[in-house]
Length: 295
Length: 274
Image (cartoon, rainbow over all chains, first blue to last red; front, side):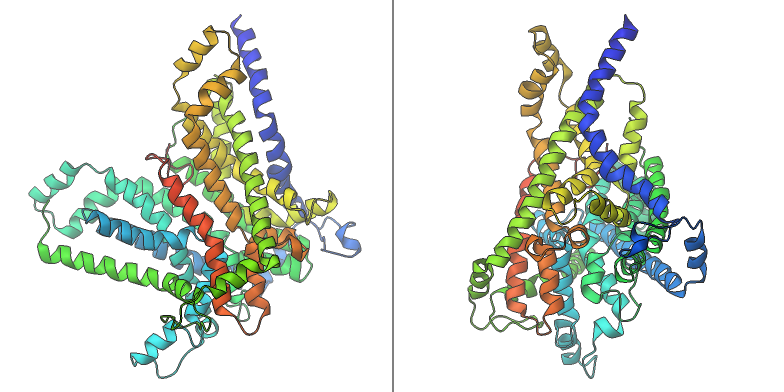
């Protein structure tokens, strides 16, 4: 009787889940599996090899090791990740959330809003704002020359392209970390900090010995989530610098695009994407593990 | 704990500076959009005018861009809401074997870098004749948003008491009737949260339409803006700024609207808070 009930429920459940499973299989899981497969082929975007491609084993992955452009884009991706996600968004977001505690409500919501708008706006608009800001006759150059810090304007997007895209991405993404940390800090009971103060802990000790240990779960999940998000950033960089000048801001996602659609090397492009996907899979698995989701 | 007054003032000053730095690009965008002679330099417009806006919204190609963005976003969010609502029901209510694993896979999928699978998706679209169609990219975006949608819907549904449904059952209602008349009305906040999140994501997406669409008349606003400042050597800052403002307004309005429904723990962060 019990068995019968479960199987009936199971059948009903399948009915409810069928549209979702069909959609996920066709548009999500299948492409992931195809990624694995295509990365072992010499497929091209057009021409005969777009349909009659050959299985070439690990060739693409061997080639990557000796491909200086791949190494550059891998290094650029790491730099972009460390500076814009971890150092930028995570630390700045934490710092803002920490400072915002116990502040005037209106002041808090004003500061919060200025940071949130950059996050809510479409990334292409964000690129546009920063292209203008960094341009030769833009706000940054004018401010720095009139303050006497610069003697003549610099083309930031040409001379310091990586710094420029990192700043733009910090601006675009910090709100997410800020919200995470605000929620986490609100959960710290007031008496914990009060008793620390009675014990004579100074500000720094309070942050490093009490606050950070108490919210380390949030720090971990936030770090993983923003790393995953930053790993896939394409439009922001592509619209600002196109991955250049040269290859100075070519990250893995831009190199993937250039190979697959610029050089018509679909197979190699997919292999590059594979590196991103595997990084993503490892990080997502860490996320599921660390986020302590109770099911 | 009481902080020293000087320390508090210093904290206010630091926050004000941060806010100001974050504000500069936004102020520039706002000022440039009402300035006919806008330059990349942040400056107060001498003769504020809405002419940039008028020229943006009277251009049929621009309107087409907004319409395309809207079509993509509305289909994407409708598909996610309907499918994930249905999927959430058994996941929330039934005692199923393997449910835990299914949910773990779903959470795992919420954060995968979607951009990494676009090359095979492009190929897939070509072979099935799906490329260059707004509907097909909407379904693709829906699929990539499904994990998030299911997770959120399940959590919202978990907070709807089962007892209400059981009462309806006694009166002879089946699952679908119970869903329609009892769960759905109580889940309006959840449904709105998911649809707003998915809608704004699809509305602002650049990479997916950039790869999967070819015909200019199909381009959504994101791709149009990109072409606007990529192709024109001489950038018309004012008009592009006005276009950008019009384009971002729905996102901002929907976000502030969604804040009303979001109880704590349902931040847009996705799956990290259970």
